[in-house]
Image (cartoon, rainbow, N blue to C red):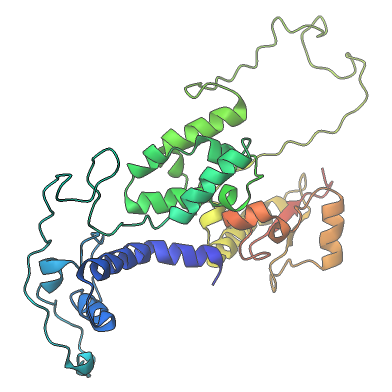
Length: 343
């Protein structure tokens, strides 16, 4: 399992929130037998249909004493460890002392100190790293525009998803961009964050809109007829490459793709390449890096394409793409189509 797969699994099943709730119950209740206490807490959950979200006090007081849901038959009879006696009946939360400087521990300004154990953010380590990267590397756009106040307004699920988008800039403080959307919808889902990063990258206002304008009127140095004719401009023949990136709507963005996604996308694109190869004006062939693919090329052929600046270099060697999940499962699902004239 790759690091990206592990992180997706943890986020999908709300593992940090479950551990947070268990820790809150342990710190508040302070049971004599913590293992038996954890077992009792987990027994109140339905193993097949667990809660969509875990509240921080899920296992505190009477919330922990709810009737256990029906179980999927296993043929085994569970037993409590050492026949632990049932917990004493108590209210959900013990009443907090009156907010008085005589009755409650207080800070220097007289404000009360909470008697409840602190509930740590599941992403606290990442948040601390973002803060350090912002100070040490001001050019890291992710860290520069990450707003802790905005982050705190998000649901636990969205917080985890935003951190996943920021992982490259968290792991690599010297990253210039530092963030990658995992799904096309992330640009709208986290617009307050991404709009600032993108505006900074393109050096425009956050509310700027792009307008196509191919009108050459007023451009200095053009021939009298206004046409971009290289010969009329006195320029030699030129070669130009235009790099265009596109994604297929059926798949997540590269950082969130599984190995199966990558191979499936490659096979889908090969259907289009087959049509290009059959056309005289294009011809050429497809070069796959996926082991056992019908069009798989050798290491020598791959290096030749890299040297010609046609094929991309080894993504797995790029720490920024690796942290973002974009380099995961290399080299599966990777390759390039080259026309007959290699143009």
